[in-house]
Image (cartoon, rainbow, N blue to C red; front, side):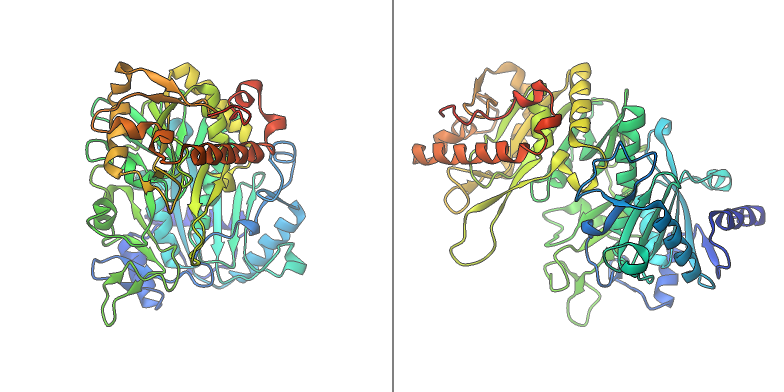
Length: 537
């Protein structure tokens, strides 16, 4: 950056309130950030060239230590509770002053970046970090402005991340020494006491989840998205373990993004400029795109190595099961640039139903789509104790409850409006069990799931008739190319039909029970889509 650019940028930090810093390193290249990290003994290079670091005490997000400043902007708009915890404006101001004092004389790394690939919704971001590899993360995960844009870009939001600063709850108003706090008036996120970089990424995601639906009628989504050769966009929602990343990574389609998107009037666009992929049990055979993306410039977190080597042992979870790789999206060969497509033609809600109740694929109307969107259902197999095989229901509103500043019905109603306007097909896809629950039935073959998604994308289900599933009211296609017809109807795959009926009633009751917390805010169209517990299978 030229001398004028450096002076003007440094002045902006002074105006922000960050004075008397040591050196402020602006917009270093990935190679320079890697070098800084190695010089300071904070990371090592793996045999693929990726930088591997340890994030310290925290190897994941700490949602109970995430706060939102309650002020004139947020007081009557935010969905307050255990997800969005109130924080006093005065406490935020004092905490910022203490962080500024902590940074006195210390070097920082500063990055100008932005979120939202659709220029109509661009959000300029300035990221100030204590450690160089945090800045590499920001470089990889956010969108990267040109050198010309950097000279004149003014930040809409600022993130300040200082892992070395430990809050004092009695003084600072936090619960513990770590924190992540969003301030919509000052347009600032303060992160401290934790080196886990996911707090940076999800902080901006939470900001966009407030701003875009609340002020622009843009639906913010925790999903992956891809685009076909004919320009048709598809969206994939799903919680961990449902196959969202695997199924959206289609060699016949181009990746828009793997995690965070917006749905505007004429586009689906990526919020990010990179991917933050889980690495546990990663192999080149199972996930070649991710495996090959972990090269120089990528950041690996909390991984272990094979003895006396710099080769990562992705099966080693002694540090954490939440090992991660952060890399720019251009490390994925079939990524589309810029990272946006048209309005979606198909949307897939992925669930790994370990109860073996839901069909492998079914079509939802708008009311059902809103209901299942708010429910955000999947099932996880219970712990590893001997003899414990009963699955556990997991519900996460809008497939991302932890990041929703607004009430889930706000997002669901906006989804329903857009579905009707664009006449989108919505599919509920069960990637879980068939023929019985976990321990009795078998996991639905990935090849069958891929064939069903391909059939939906290519319009094959327009040629077949559908049958309504009792209780849940789902529309099940009677046939699908390359898939045995008998597996399409889950009850038929169970040897004990009465056992299926009982399990279906149990799952329906869990849906209804979970939805009680949203019922007072849901419209009639959504409520009418609830499972009919009294209905016989």
